[in-house]
Image 1: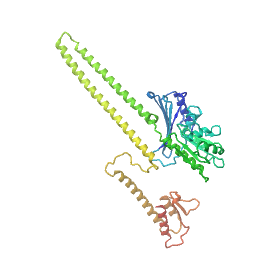
Image 2: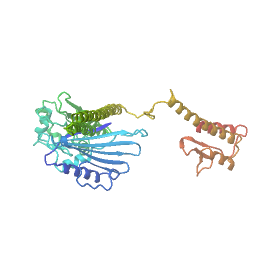
Image 3: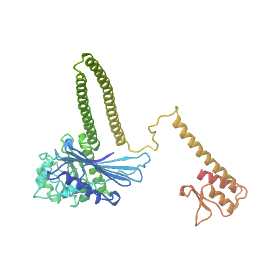
Length: 478
């Protein structure tokens, strides 16, 4: 599932080596659980660093002057995080993408994430170009009387920027409706954040914008695309309103950024596919050149053999015919080999295209899913119709039989219960019950609090106490 996507325009001073060094610095200075140990970079443009549950790979696509970087980390719960940095040094544009997917055995977890710290490094080193007359920042831009025209021009549609503009106004009590520093940090690289310094400028802004402005805690989001227009979220004094507003703004901006069209050469798979296609084309050219050279060598051999004996015409003719036959046989064999190679290339290309379609379908399916299925069918075909179903039912029957055996044993032990004896205690422990250390009459099935049973120290009803214990135990545990 795509969580974050943006394309930044980069200053020309960023070189390929600077880019790779910055990526390695980002990893080495990141969260301890994300660091790949013992990275030593010696200037290679195609290299992979690996650790236990994470790897960092760098690929250079020289034909298009692109360097692609992917960092992948697998969490203990099965979640897989992919962070991609694709830098095109011809257009000086960089794509930053964060994607999360799941392994088959993974659990569904919260989608909370943080904007890649790599963008902060780009901002601090001055590598990101201005968006018009605005710098890309990770802190809010305070709007005062001196720069009021920046806000007014956005509201009136006179200023257009590549990134959306978020305008945060002061409340009636001249306070910020949200944590503007935190929100600006979350939106760095995908939006500009304007914050009204004081609500005293409300009358002036209203007059300059013909009343179209936000005020008293309202937040406006102005998109670059006029078709989308702008969104407005009003402020209401209530508990937790700051968190609600922040989440709404972040979600709206991220949805806009993630839906922007991205070319294939600004994705990890797109770059790798292009490299593979170039290699296939190069291989075909090499095969064609080799074929032409071999044909020429064969004909030269024919000419050499035909000139061996100029004195005897019959011998010359015989040698010529033999040489032609031999050459034709060799060429026929070579032609068959060449066709076989071309067929293999076509097959591999077809498989590549099929995998790309499958990948696109799976990613689209994952993006549309709110939950992950517990059981996947897998890719294996049934040996006979219903084989997978029979296998699952057989396993369930085995477990049910075991449960029934445990229930029968519990019934036998507790039928005539009058007090907890060592024999009954040992029998209950053998079928999975664990006794509470503080209360020896309290047991839990496999230690789970949901399946707790409490027995009396002595039975008050000798006639049906044992049956009651049997009923309670089986109902709770089985």
